[in-house]
Length: 503
Image (cartoon, rainbow, N blue to C red; front, side):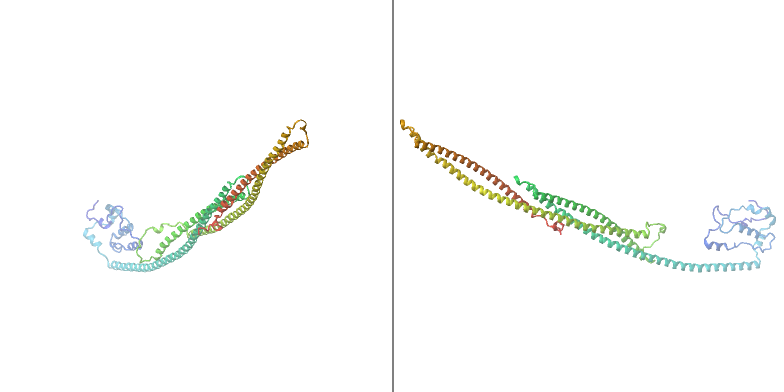
């Protein structure tokens, strides 16, 4: 650093203190605080009123303008303060003289400085008072606005709780109705399954009747009305079973849809119960509540995925879906009742038709059996009489042997008459005719005997046929009357066929 003789170092008076590179001259202040600090003048500024030949206040005024408060002051080189123009204006003085000149002020400067301090104090106090009043007003306004906002938030939370409670009650009511409907439909499905189970007995009875009637014999193994009605009954039962199975499948499908709607309602109700607890807790929170805390940035997090309109629409859609499923379930229950009544009536009607056919066939068979029995009795009587007649014919043939022997013995004896006595007289002719007549009589009797024996054989064959046919009729009567009609007495009632047996 360059030094002039006859002077002391003046850099300490004119230059700002050295500050490290990048540091602020004063710490920056915000808002009104910074402006309040800037309003103060440096305490070491020399007034311009000093009557000094070199007017040192000019320099300080320039330094003050070039380095405002709050800005960074660059590092100054002391050699720049002693330029030629400055040296020419500031004569070299002794240190003691220069100190005396810089430390003396005039009374005017003193009064002016005091007045300036007074004005500055008044301005500062007025600004501070206005700031205090404004702060008080702002505090009152913010407190009132905060209280109002909190009340509005609490009111909105209360309205939200009312909306949630309303839709919660609606969803809960619909959930109860859906639970009742599911129970009713489940009971109706069980009734239908019971009705389907009850059809197995009639089907087995009809098939057993068909199987038993296959054991009929001979001419009775006929495709009669009973056979046709039994086959029709089997077809009716199988069609009824198909209808009932289809209705059970429909009931299972409807139950699945009902349970799906019930599940959505339960999820919605669970969510509303949880959010009701959360919002109720939020609604009860106050400034004096415990558990309060700061959660920075939470107001900027969007935790919602719906809007009130879509929120209402979601619950309303769930309720409408549940109502549609309930209406479909009620219609299905009506269909189930109609199908069970229809199938039960059809099966019972066909059961009566089969029984009527059985009754007619049994009556016909009994008439035929009675007729066979009557004819058999007559045939047996005729056989007895024919056997007696055969015995009579045989006795008659046998009875002709003695007269034949008498006549032939007489003729043989007369053949031994001597000579002319061997005459064809009247006795000879009569004996000859007698033997011939006896031969003819025996031939006739033999022919009648053979005819009687043939008739007896025919009667025996007829008797056998009638007895066989009678046995066939008895077998048919046993099958139809005892076995078939006996097993048909276990046919279920219309109530069981309608599925009421389980109740």
